[in-house]
Length: 448
Image (cartoon, rainbow, N blue to C red; front, top):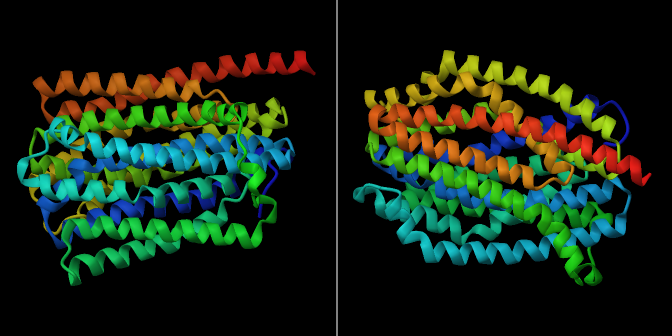
């Protein structure tokens, strides 16, 4: 099921690879959406607001593991594209060692800073116990999250996007079943939802391990693959750290946005939380194109096929734009109906806040769609600093607009912050991609 993307029509390779990614990403979102729906409809608005108030911290830990694993496995994909099988297995060993180290580091830091961070996020006092319990259970289960993201990232970097999907579907079903059981029958409340999430992620990671062991002997690593030296470590850190920083910077921007939103009370928090979840589901086609773009670019960069990279970026940019138009239209037409799924008889203030957020953000989906394409193309070519700097652009613009405009315009200022950040970042990554691909083409021609 591994796939060579250095030969054949780019779109005929990317689209079949992207479809399982899309389905998988939808199920990945179901982790969060299931939590929100179950908590909101079975426990109530206050419990929903508690989960929503700390969801940026959960997202921060999740995107850190995704950023590190995606960055590390770019090296794996490049070596597979260059047909360096020994180097590929050495890369897998390096990915495992570095992942264990960073999970322990993230867990330790979160335990040290959680109390002051929650205080800075302006979480209402009545929401604090549930919010704290939810986020700390997620943090303590971080090995499960990192395990799945790393192993699925390795398989995807080698062209197999279907297997991680199957395991994700299984774990999504398990997550829903366990969350219902823990909340409705065991009475564990909000913590039960977090425990179900961690168990489901652990199951998906274990399934990945067994499948790789049984089906892919070329991916089996031995003791020699763990004998690391600094050049090997640096080759992976050079990709993984900028991606982690990029995602953590984006996470900080969302935390700041949530902190500003938390000042407006539980109804606005609940509305903002539901709108974000609906939006994330609608954006999955664009996100999936971006992941496919990174894998395709990494393999073709390893084979020095810049012509194929350019063609794929052009075509995927147009397709991603089309998806952004469809997503915007669907949310305009059916956004309120979808939001109503999350709560039983939601208050007008909740619906008003959610509708306002969607109304201000969907016109900027075009710019967001281009960010996924050009940022991931830069990542696949090994230009790790560009995604990181792009995250800084988003952080600065999102935070500045939310803080400055929330004073005179209230919750509307929070809604305006997202499109301003997307427009700024899209301009940056578009210009960066075109500059660096010309530079790399010239270097490749000179070394040939």
